Image 1 (cartoon, rainbow, N blue to C red):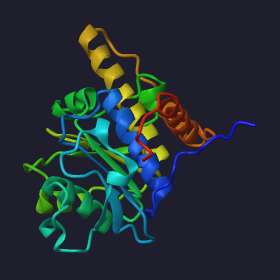
Image 2: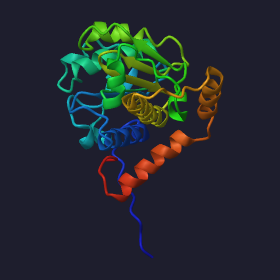
Image 3: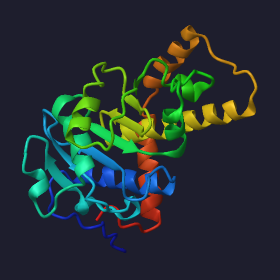
Image 4: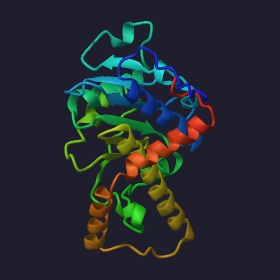
Length: 253
């Protein structure tokens, strides 16, 4: 009988969380939702959310492995002094978020093209013109006060905008998008669909034709139905990991 050898598991804490987050990095790069080495994902690993995994300083998403991820303490003022210090803007944005928003277990910040175009419009609202757009009806916040790179002061300011637990998307005016969620699967699925929704809206605007906008009642009903749709986020991530595994990817090492 042939023996099937499983991939060895390094002796590192929070291994499954690391694997899931590494897969999200790889797939984000494949979809071209990242920007060079400038964007960041994080995942809380303790009860109050202040200790979190995050990508190393300026490593390309397509190269991130589970064992590469940094373990950061949002309450450690010496974080930027160590040899494996994170990117200063990643520390500012994600440190502030995990310090003040314990419900933000996972956070994904990107400058994806269509979400950033939306963030660049004077009116950055996303009207419910299709099912994907309706997913986010009354479920996002718009940051209208961009103040430069997300060092600590800017990160603290942004964190204060996530006051409504129902709103898990921040359209960062003049910047990009921040998505939060309960897990890697939940957050990545939301990131994926928000970019799709933003693309649909931007392309619809480009036609110059009147938009067919859903009523508030139907948009809210659709959003609630999608929120309770069984396991779509989990299955989405599991399928992506299955593809990476079949390709022989080293993301889970």
